[in-house]
Image 1 (cartoon, protein in one colour):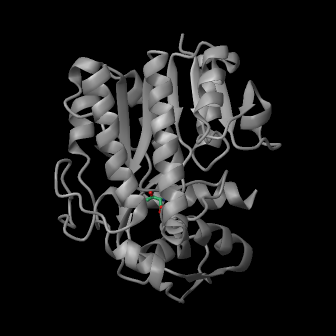
Image 2 (image 1 turned 120 degrees about the vertical axis):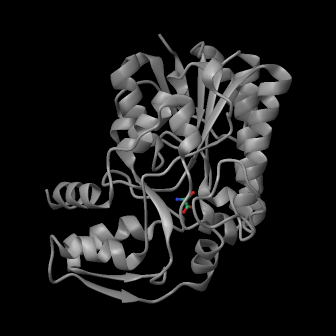
Length: 312
Ligand code: AKB
């Protein structure tokens, strides 16, 4: 049985991942940590410790206290916030990752951290972006993600830490809203569709980005961590995606359920520039071949589920 230490456990992915891992591996075997505690299920349903990921001493002490054998490092600033605070983003995203990798090395843990489609840049092939390709991102977030992929590979080769990662697209969920990302519009649009029957998008029509529904993202993490190491040719990090759409396509899908839904545009130049530097669609065949990645939700199935859950 695993004993898992999660950072950023109250964030967009962490809050759902913590609950799922507790269901699979047992409540007491999943130690949720975040910079502060709140009233959510992830914080209240099992062991929780306040850990600032830039504080290496506390991180290692807590990991040792619970004798963990797996570190899942989720705490990070997303793309738009990182772009607004690049120095802070470097310190948090890279400092936190380094401390988490050191914790994993010291305790001989298996290790997971997410990368992102943000690890690609304007000179990357835009369509069916391959697993191994040019990675010259032009955002601080992207620089952090590429450096993070390399650092996690380094810990594998140098110290034998079993590091694994996924390049996530925009993640869509009805549980915890994202904060400070470029793909957040694709979450907000559902909330606004239910509440006001209209949405003003800060991303322009014609801008395609990869996306995935949260249940598929959580399954992908569990499956990758359970995958047979001898089958993994890649480690940090695998392209994964379930769909690619632009704002017009998601609006059209919502209109199938809410015919009066109205879409307007007020493009935010900062987030639009970030989106324009990312791929239109990435190729997940390495993840499929090496550990059997698959996604259950396409745009139609996800939209029906999001609108149904948010209506309740
Ligand atoms: C963001 O928009 O910053 C994230 C991501 C794609 O990494 N959702």
